[in-house]
Length: 251
Length: 327
Image (cartoon, rainbow over all chains, first blue to last red):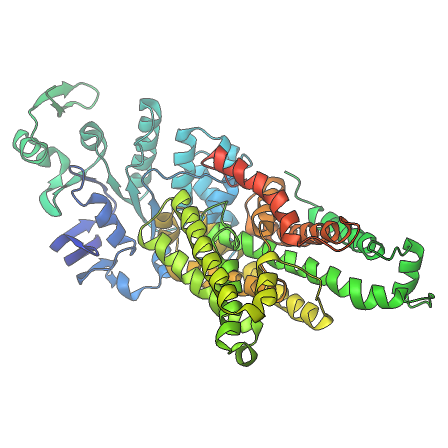
């Protein structure tokens, strides 16, 4: 079943149109990487999905509903979002920061949802710490837990591992993979082509607001595509752990 | 973090300070006589008049004004995600006093009244500042510099009005310095109602204020209509500050200091922050006014001088510290 449908979306910023009649359907329960060069419209596309930007024409449908017809709080119960360079520069406790994901659920007993989200991200033991005391990797897990506590099945993440070391990148991507297995749909902006190939099931490649390629990640990544999009040469290497070949840039 | 009992401690300290402040002034009144007067007993001379008609309304007015400014500072700092934002620094208070001065100059002050003139001036300034800061996605420092520029422009405009309208010079000058010397019980009632309305509004929206501390995209995706909510809360804060300005002139830095210091003690969560920030604002302004009242052997200092002496060092410290953590 489809999770998300973008229908003839046209729009962008006040003086700069990014998308012209973008048409795309994304399935449920998949790890979808959104990639492309800087300025290709990846983060802008997410802004249309959580309604920070309004299309000039066209529409975005989540589970068949046009999100422009949903109140912001209603939409917040259908998705969760982790921002690019998301940081928490105020001394909330981890529990308080995660509970902010329940803002859309006025007056409900949120204890179970908050605890479940913290458990999924393995931060229950940190719940009484203030977020300003945490490492970068722990902060990303708090941000993901806050998004999860919104109880939507669609997760939007904008470069969630940008500032993390390899160990924490691996942990975060592993966590997202586990969530996909539990039925979540993950749409994740990623720059690192290695991470895209290792973790995503589907890849959507954008360039200057247009779809260059979309489909199963192994099929999307080709020498020609990397040359066309990034103007780089690439070569394939065999990864014994993954038991498949992956593309690497030729330095 | 010291969470429990802070509000009760501040309330108790404020009451003790009120009692102390009642005894201080050109006419020395002993604590025993003050308590006797407050409990309705007869005391000789005009001491009863001094306590009931001169000092008590002034003390209550300064306390409630401080509470309003503490509350307003809290909402400004949350809505603009800037720990250095307060109605004075951003020029909102100057906007309020300019509104009054302009209404006096063009002769519509009797029609509008000072509070409404101040409210219009303050809210127009708020709309301008918010428009500037949000349209251009300006940094914390740009926002503050915009406020400083607005302050300069409005100060120049006030000076021009004083120059053009010399017969109102004293009255206009009064609003630029800040003083509680003309406080009345009627003003105390308006101030206490204003404080209660602002506090109830903000308390009901404490989760919204927490959300405003997130980056805009996360707050939006979390269900908050960020732009509309931010503007409404800022207008409420600036309107309440304008009421204070219309009665007592521009009083700086209480809105900066009260939330800032309180946040260090109770953390950034607004359900815990609002009440102690208000009480501490009240305490600070009452203490400042008491000092301003008794510091000189004859006459008194404008209270704005005392609050600036307290607030400017904190402001410079925050600027030097650069990016600041809420809490």
